[in-house]
Length: 237
Image (tube, rainbow, N blue to C red; front, side, top):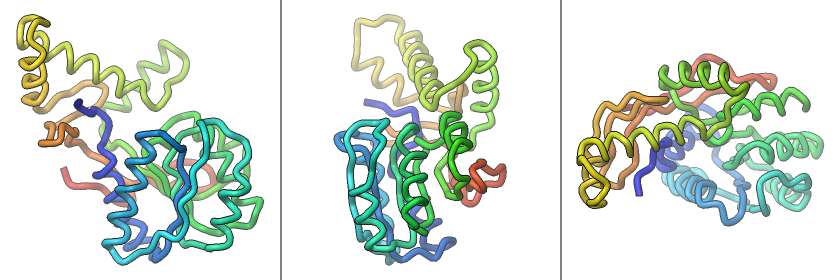
């Protein structure tokens, strides 16, 4: 299996680095959606990197399904531990609701998150709540801006996985065209592995040995509920 979105390991390592070196965090709590492969992979990668950098994960909590409305038990554990940062490795709609409830409970931890936050729904939902601050991983690719503009013009809005879906289908089409047929799955697999400098909704420089894409990712700040233009930290290409 090949990934087209930024790998969990790359993002989580970068976010852990920012948490320790720029936010001066030595303790972290994590809340994520149970049985979600994306969220589980991200939090485990973050935990490994954060611990290696000298931090300690003091609370690990899960919840069922995306779009839940009550997170009292998870946030009570976080409040008691009082961590420096609270990692919310999930998606809208849940993340803004967790943030709002955390603020209502007086939790002062800095919110941090994955590229699951990189979704217009995140910003629009945040605008309905008390403005919050935080940091999250994001795609730095300028091609993504053009894709989002074109997609929004045609369909009215864009969710966080639209670009990934577009790239997945286009890369598969390129590989099939290279092979010349769909009769040899192994040849198609190898053709995908050999794709370099792909430019679509996003740019993928190449795939690594684990079939993860090498692409530009960074950490962006949310200030008063709005994502900022400046990038806090970027991962090397």
